[in-house]
Amino acid sequence: MNLTSIKKQLGKYALELITVAFGVFLGMYVSEWKAQQKVNKNVNKSLSYILEELETNKASLEKSYQYHQQISVSIDSLKSKLTEQDMFLPYISNDKFHHMSIEGWQGIVITNSEDIAFESSKITGTLQEADIELVHLISKTYKHLDFNAEFGKTILNKMISINSETKVIDVLGTLELLTSDFMNSEKVLLSELEKTIKKLKESSKVKVEHE
Image (cartoon, rainbow, N blue to C red; front, side):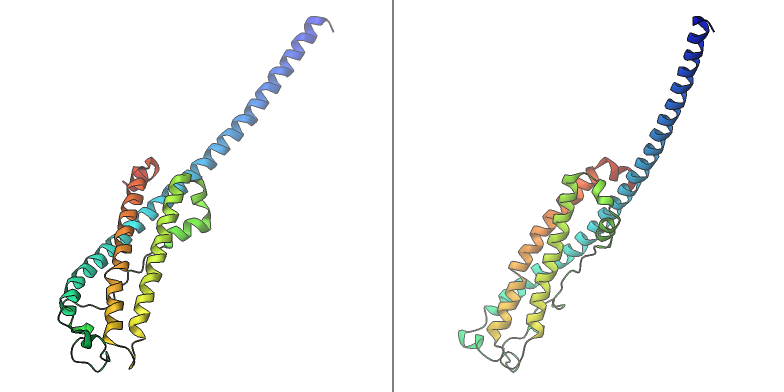
C-alpha cells in the first residue's frame, strides 16, 4: 500500500470519527437543551402560580386592613366616653363597654394566607432554578405573611381567653393592639406584597406564562 492510499484511508477514518463525535455532541446538546426547556417551563409555571397566590393574599389582606381601619375609629369613639373608673370594671358584667357595640364589628378578622404554590415549588425544587434575588424576595414575603398570621392568632387568643377576672382596660388593650401594631404590620406587608408582585410581573418568564 503506497503513501497516497494510506493518506486516503487515514482521511476517511478521521472524517468518520469527526462525524460520529459531532453526532454524539449534537445528541447531548439537544438532550440538554430539551431538559433545560423542561426546567424553564416548570419554573415559569411555579412563578406564575406564586404570582396568582400572592395576588389573592394581597386582596384578602386589603379587606382586613380596611376593616381594622374602620373599627379603629369606632373604638376610639367609644373609649373617649369611658372614665378611668370604667376602665377597671369587670369586662363581662359591665354595661359601659362591650366589643359587640363597636360599629361595623365583624369579629377578630385575621387573614389566613395561602402558601400552596410556594410550598409546592420548594418541594419540587423548581425555585432553585429561578433568579436568586427574586427567590429571596418571594421567601421574605411568605415569611412575613406567616408572621402576620401568627401575630393575629395571638390577638385572637387574647380575646378567647376573656374570663370573669378580665377588666375593660384589658379588652381595650387587645383591641388597640389589633388596630395599631397589627394594622401597621398589615400595612407594611401590603407594601411588601405589592413590591414582590411587581417584580414577578416584570420577570420576563412569568410575563410570558401569565399572559
